[in-house]
Amino acid sequence: MLDPDPHSNPVPLGVRQRRLLFRANHRGTHETDLLIGGYVTARIGVLSDADMDALEEILELPDTDLADWLTGRRPIPANADSPMLRAIHAAAQR
Image (cartoon, rainbow, N blue to C red; front, side, top):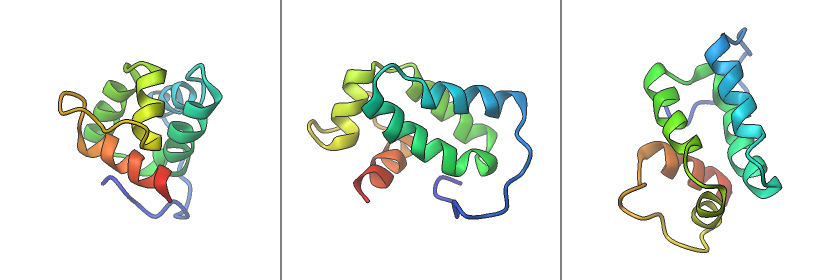
């Protein structure tokens, strides 16, 4: 479930969800914090385990690359392309 309703009822977050939420909002650069953190904050309560696995992989990528890809300054390369990264990119373009 990559693009759930961000206004759905909040659910209590587990340890993994809280850790991912913190990591997404404390990337190191303000721009990437906003791009990734905003996406994750709105959806963390409804992400599946597979979605969280994909998110963890994205959070390992360098901030400068993520910022360039998510803002469209550079295209997402094939080796980093994933449904989760495309969903975050689409949300950043709105």
